[in-house]
Every structure is written in C-alpha cells, then in structure tokens.
Amino acid sequence: MHSYQVLIIGSGFGGQCAAVNLLKAGISDFRLLERRDFFGGTWCQNTYPGAAVDVPSPLYSLSFASWRWTQMFAEQAELQQYTQYVVDHFQLRDKVELQANVERVEWDQDARQWQVFTRDKGIFRGQFLINASGPLSQPVVPPFKGLQRFAGKSFHSNAWDHNYDYRNRRVAIVGSGASAAQIIPALAPQVAQLHVFQRSAHWVLPRADRRFGRFQRWLLGIKPAYTLLRWLIYWQFETRVIAFKYSTSALRLVQGQALRHLKRQVPDAELRRKLTPDFTIGCKRVILSSTLYPALSRSNVTLHGRDQGIAALDERGIQTLDGQHIDLDLIVWATGYDATDGVIAYPVLGKHGARLSDAWAQYPRAYLGTSLPDFPNLFIVTGPNTGIGHTSALFIIESQMNYILDCIRTLKDQGLRSIEVRREAEQAYTQMIHQEMARTVWQSGGCHSWYQSKSGHVIAMFPGFSFSYHQLTRRLKPADHILS
Image (cartoon, rainbow, N blue to C red; front, side, top):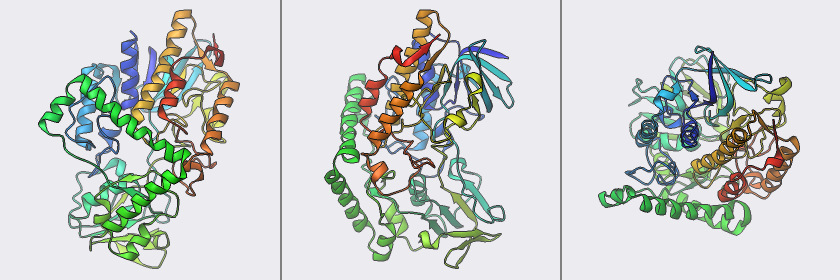
C-alpha cells in the first residue's frame, strides 16, 4: 500500500502541469502513475512518420517552461525533447511510477481517500485524485469483418512499429483525419503503392510553417519576447471562435480559402470531387497541411471513398465494397481514439458506490469539465467539454489547474478533507454548455465527428472563447460545492 496526498494518473502534459503546479503550491507529497514503461504522454507515444503539432509551438507550450523552438509547428522529435526538458527541469522523474496500469479506482468514504488499484504495482491511496490520462489515449480500430485474418503487418498509428520497413511495400492507411494527413505525405514517396481509405473528406487549409533562424531562436530564449509572441499568436487564433460560433459569413470566407487551396493543389477534377467535404468547415477538425493534397495526387496513391470502403479483410489484404481486392503488406489504422464516451478507460466508484459509467450513461458531463457530484476530490484534466478547436489545449489545462489547486488549498486552509461539486451546480453548468453548443458549427455544421458522443451531444469541445473558460476557472465558487 502506497499513500500520498495527491495521485496523478498519466504523465503527459496534463500530468506534468498538475505536478509542477503542486510543487509551486508547496505540495510535494504526490505520485504520477504511468501505465507505460516510459514517461511523457502523447509526444513520446505518437512517433509515426510526419508526426507534428498543429498549433504554433510557442503557444503549444507550458507558460512556465519556455523553449527555443526550431520551427513554427514543431515535429514529434522536438516535442519529445521539450517534454523531457519539462520532466528534468522540474525534477519529476523521481515522482513517477512506471508500468502502473490502473484497473479501477474507488472512494473510501471513511478514510476520505481514493484507492487506485493497479495491475502490477499494487494499491495506491491518495486524498486527491487527478485523472490526466487524456482524451486521445484509447486507440480505436473498427471491428471490420475478418480483422484477425490479415497475414501481413498491421498497427495503429498510436503504436508505430519502427522495426518494420515499409519502403517499396504495398500499404493501406485506413482513416483520413489529422494523423493520416501527416502520415500520407511521409509514406507516399517511399512505398510502392499507397491506398487511402477515406470515410469522409476533411477541410484542409495551408500550413504556414517556417523554420526559425538563429536570431529568432535567440529571441525565443528571452522571456519577455517569448511571452509577447505567445500572446500575439494567442489573440490571432482566438478570433477563430467568431467563425465557429458567431459568424456564418466568416465561415464561408474560410471555406472559400480551403476550396481554393484544394483547386490549386489537386488538378484532377474527380479527385477534387472525392476530397470536397459535404459539411460546413469547422464541423470536424480542420487539417493544416500543404503536403497532403500533392501526396494524394501521386500516381502510386489511390484514394478510396465511402462507396469504395472496406467490406472485409482476408489473409492477403482488403476486399472493398465495390468488389475490388487489394493485396497489401501493411495496414496502418489511423482511425482515431475513443475521445468522448471512453475518456476514462477504467471503472470509477464514488460515494455510496456511485459509478462514473452510470453518471455518464447518457453522455459525459462535468462541472468546468473537471469535477462531478458523488465523486469527491476527483479532478479530470481535459474532461468533457474542455477541448478547444482553435488554440492550444495547454491553455485550457493550465486554466483547469487554477480550479484544482484552489480546491486543494481551500480544504487545507479550512482543515477539511473533501470537496464535491453540488449536483445542481453541475446540472446548471452542463445545461449552459449545451445551450451554447447549439450555436456552434460543431453541433450544426452537418457532420458526425469524434467531437460527439454516441448521444449526439458534442462532448469534446468548449463552446466559446478560451479566455471565457479561463475566467470560469479563476476562482473557486464555494456555494457550488460541498466541503466537509
């Protein structure tokens, strides 16, 4: 049995941000539980060819840990370096328990503690539990007929096998979202054949990437210059919410830009038709790429639309809905994650045996996307409706920390043991979220996306400006909580 004041599940940016904020608050009695055998989260796990961030690097960084980025949109290797810098600079390595795969968590009402049961590392106990496992941590592979029959190589983009040499092989990429849009240009020049299976087209805008020169990198090492650049990028990106929520004319303007990008880069009319979405731009995640369309236009690349999709797999490859058989050496599943209904993969039992799965049976919900009634001292980093479609997710994570640390400090100052959001406060917040969501393109743009749960509610996104969310999390509202 291992006891700590705070337990943090996950060691990605969410877990690191929680750990550093605890240290800054004078709390060192905590432990990060990481299911893998390495520390670092998304940018240490996702190592597929072409992996890079789609938010400008100076903004996609923690406010308390600046970095001399080499380019505007950092690639995976540099993001991994940055992650390790944060870990080492704040001396977090000694705070992590690797291969601590959480199987379930239970609230002990008598002790006012959470019990975390792991597969191989025993039981951990903590007064506070911060779940920072992240919404993009549970890979999904659709249950296609004959899935296990394929005799070639296959893996999810989340678990790329770098020991497999794909050069001059026959390869299929299943999926056409953000990961696929980065993998396709990286693989296309090197493989014999590339078959891309697209369920639906995505809107694509040019990626305004650039490498920073020596003087610019020197400037990034000066804190005021770094902060100024972050805020300039932040406010530029924040204006995108106007299009997503308030202005259909702004959306039409951006959609026109995307159509011109498509026409410039894809000369073939039939391929352009396949690549033209049938929903409003912004309804699904907008892809930033200046290399995807040229890759799809190559002679060794074939794009299969919905009517040419996968009927079944067999030993040799894929049978398509229109009767083709495609022989393959490798299948890459770029099919995304269970980012809404499956945002927490393990069972969670709260007060009086309350189950999180029951609380979320209709759809996932949480006060400030962070806490729930019947689950005292539990905080969910990047929980329901905390995703952001126009700026850095790290800004939201840092905003959540204001609320989480305020809860912990309040209990400490008042000599109390537990804090729990009132049911009526959570209900009022959730009602507000979905009323506002109805005004956004994510709900009304005519698509079905991973932003939505099975219920049809948009769960992944916050329906407004990120500074509005920051304001909501700045100060704890004691009247919205039960303290004991």
